[in-house]
Image (cartoon, rainbow, N blue to C red; front, side, top):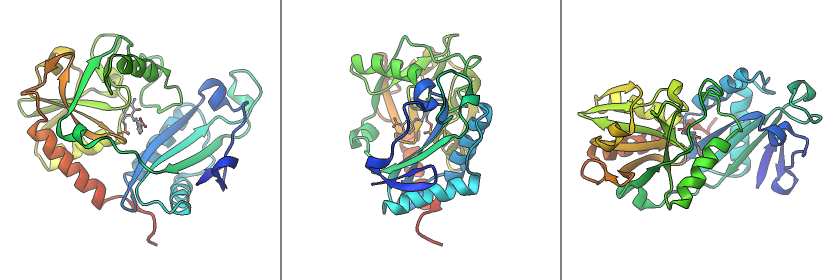
Length: 292
Ligand code: PXG
């Protein structure tokens, strides 16, 4: 396996960063989780725009421009002869003396891992997921804006630990006001009376790339009314349908939340249709890896 590290493709065992890297010492950095399907990188430019904005927000100067980042991702995939892959693009503040001050780090560290993708079991998509709500609240957007996809994931990891301990794969996180924010690594949608709603970033949600694609599909292909709005657990329990979106998960039906069946307790019709439309989109679009 070849890893892209600071401009070079190096063997996995040589892909190392310093213990003085501020990404490790302070979680000071940003990242993207991207997927390639059948030789195409899904929504690569949207992922790069989000990375560029995350970096801007934390005052981190990226070592490459958008074109350069795109090429680095493509080069990493082709060096590993991958057609279907999970891509982890990470930029940290870089190597520097101890202390929070980012000025201690003269150069950012950039690396790209392109690995085989481990798919969720098929029954997740047909039978649906059961969720719980965890006690860990989503980080307040006034403290750390969720639009910044940063290396600080402890908030989500604490929620994940609660979920796993209770025997669940995913969990709903509320914000400090008690409104639904998102899940530990996925965005959430509810459908009621053919209207689709997902929490806005100001309520604590990452502006997911999958979320964005699903909003477009719901509007354009399913002619649904879609809004970004706050809602409560009551609206989840009483929804006709509920589903999650994320790069790893794609679109996954939710059939039970905190012991309440959602709708008839089976994967919803609209959700099933969106899964199909999303799969079509991922198989037909994206930046080609191997064509000129
Ligand atoms: N919310 C959070 C907190 C996330 O970390 C999403 C929503 C979904 O966003 P995208 O852009 O992926 O549609 C994420 C993304 C993993 C994994 O390995 C997790 C994510 C992405 C890729 C892989 O668990 N989370």
